[in-house]
Length: 545
Image (cartoon, rainbow, N blue to C red; front, top):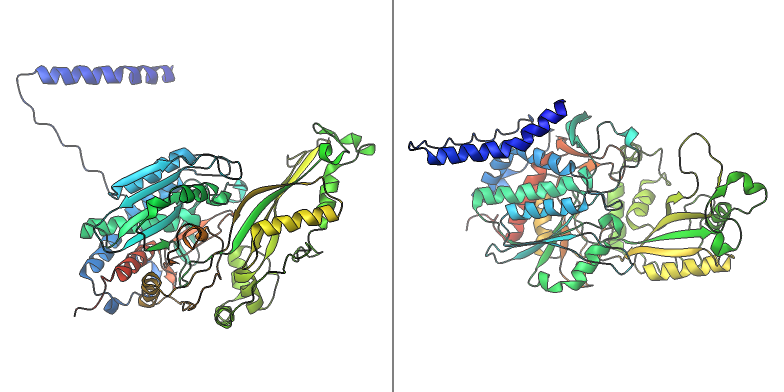
């Protein structure tokens, strides 16, 4: 009955509103409209400086506009965190498709609010590996500035695979205490990568609110396939190079203290063993597990096949020629890794990552593996009875495993796949199918450019521990689709970096720091660092002549 009454009220409400409007229009007396009350500002009680011991060196902030933007960020930090919460609350899971169209429109709305003259959601169509790409959102903001900056975004996230491990629901964006931080935001995408990207949008909006326009022209491209090998983004950039004409540099979200721009390579494949291809075992569908007494198992064959690909530790790839083409590290790269290793505490790093220990017990070996290593991972495996607990006898007719290969110069994805095929054939697994999900080549980057210098100067001003950039080209970084703007389609400098921190990417309890502590800046600091890097790059934070 209650539901029926609510439905009746909803049905009659528009008609009553219309009748009241007509009556008001026919009245001979004129009544001034009552202004709607202003929306109340959110009150989260965020402390912009948190418990930070690190401080911005204000003697290096010469621009009065920049100082005003800092004050604006502090004053509106509660609203800025609410913006992030709203974005976290919109799922955008590219591997399942959940919320992708809605998220693309939401991102376009952000660019519209920024005042960009061009904003559009592009349907990229079917990609080269046969999958439908997710939408790419493009925006162009002409500010009449001398320099044009491309900003890279991704709006997709990973699925939530272990919901019972989360201490707060993954799509609520709750603020919780997590020592040493009084407030972190928990949510899928918090650190990878909605947290730093919303900080970037908040920063741009703050500049517009204070100065009226940005210090640079901005082209923003936001992809929805980063967690699917950037397949749609790859097609979009290759199909629309004209949309990036006149771009001088690319700026991306980054980490505290490190300028990033290069990328390792990554190729994803699926391996499938089936009874029909093998010629033994179930050839059409799963069958009752009791039949194993008299029927061969494709699943056991698949496990035996996988055991030929790596050694007993799982850490060395046994594919012939896998390591042949690796380019050696330069003296500068070795020196940078050595410097980084001196700041690493392996026990703390393992605890922060949520692992028992690392492969290596030596900090230099660990850092080298993490930043210039190669690997073949088993990302997942499925087939047959996939239900936890209980029983249910199944003999699968097919089993599939998913693997990512991380590779470095001068290895290539296609060559790795070819060597994998040769290895399987050599060991009698000609029937095992290889499906290439996607490939993102490595990309080198050098940092002798105005943007990298602007980011580096920002780090110095913010007192953040930093690694001076290597003078020549290098990767020394994680995977992201840098290659499309590092020589494949466009060839422009790339630099990323801001202060702030988060963690647990792709894992339970993914978080981003909202109130900083010690030498880690909070969300207000993240936004200020982005603003400062842009003003430095634009040449608008210089001492008076």
